[in-house]
Amino acid sequence: MNLTSFTAEMLYLIAGLLFVIGLKRMSKPKTARRGNLLSAFGMLLAIVGTLIHYQVIDWTYIVIGMLIGTFAGAILARVVKMTEMPQMVALLNGYGGLASLLVGWAEFHKQYENVLNPNVTHSIDTYTALTTFLTVVVGGLTFSGSVIAWAKLKEVMTGKPILFKGQQIVNAAILLFILAGGVLFTIDPINNYPIFIGLIAVGLLLGVTSVIPIGGADMPVVISLLNSYSGIAGCLAGFVIQNNALIVTGSLVGASGIILTNIMCKAMNRSLANVLFSGFGSVQTSKGSGEKGEVNPVNVEDAAAILEAAGSVCIVPGYGLAVAQAQHACRELAELLEKNGTEVRFAIHPVAGRMPGHMNVLLAEANVSYDHLYEMDAVNPIIETIDVCLVIGANDVVNPAAREDKTSPIFGMPIINVDYAKTVIVMKRSMATGFAGIENPLFYKENTRMLFGDAKNVLQGLVAEFKK
Image (cartoon, rainbow, N blue to C red):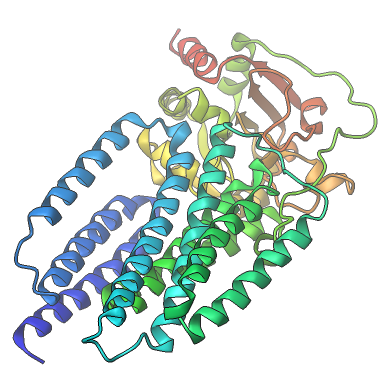
């Protein structure tokens, strides 16, 4: 091994270590930002290592590309609202898949042209053909699936499951074509370029047919799975171009995505097989059963009095908090409660919001102390001792139907048992259902008080009452 190759491999090794450390730090809110920076620096070293490995002398276009990407990322970080962060994450997953598809296609086309050269005697080997085929298919379905996920979250298209007659047959036919086409292409890649193009098209189609039957409320699981797919596609692209850094990076992203998908599935009481073989979330919405009863509305002044008298308060944030951009007002209220001698906790459901960790990121933006964040499993055992649960914009993750109604689509899903608290104050704009379109019997329970209005305005009103 010459000095150039040794230097490149050492940079790859350091980059890989930084990826592992960064990924570990990103598992906790307190160290996530530093982990992200370490991973970004590791990616920079991997790029430099690649340029050295391939002895790229002119870095002009590389630097221009990095500057464009940095500028675009900085703009997005500033412009994209927290409510639109899930959509952006979905698109970023898609871009990763598209990049892998293009890398695999470009590498195959280059080798295809080389083989057609009469001065070249070698052909494309089976290993290269197989990894190229897998790269473009996984990359394609990641890209198109992520675009559909973005469209559902952005409400460009309906967030409800889209079903049609013979859907499973269509999916089966697509998979059979991919398998048959993959075998034919791998056996003779030179004479089957049209099949290769067909595989790209069908891979893109598979991404669409795999995601459209999934309900918008289940997007946290889908985003995790697509994130894993983007890593797998990147890993396969690494095998195509024989780049160790890309193989390691893709493997880490793919594995961590699968682990996170499994966590999300458990939080939704779904199996991974439901996600992988479509049909996930394709359930009919429930309108509830029995008498609804009457709600007990409360105004800001009375709600402030209830909170002021509480010895312990558990705040359960949801997507409504993000929509209203009310995280800063929420933090201010929590601080005033603590000054009043109240013990304050924030209960975070794994799938609250529209993506994994959505509420953690939202509260971190408002500088809510990490020590105040509690996972669902840590809160539920003590929920009966809590004086007041303040539910802000959450719906499905606190819906008792998941425990009580066997006909409910979310029956069996672990929830935060806020109805077990002594008093529940639910902050909502209206009595409308959540993203899953399911009625919530929590609103009609005797210990529940409904505080209607925009979350930010209501929280600011509560803060004003405490400051009087």
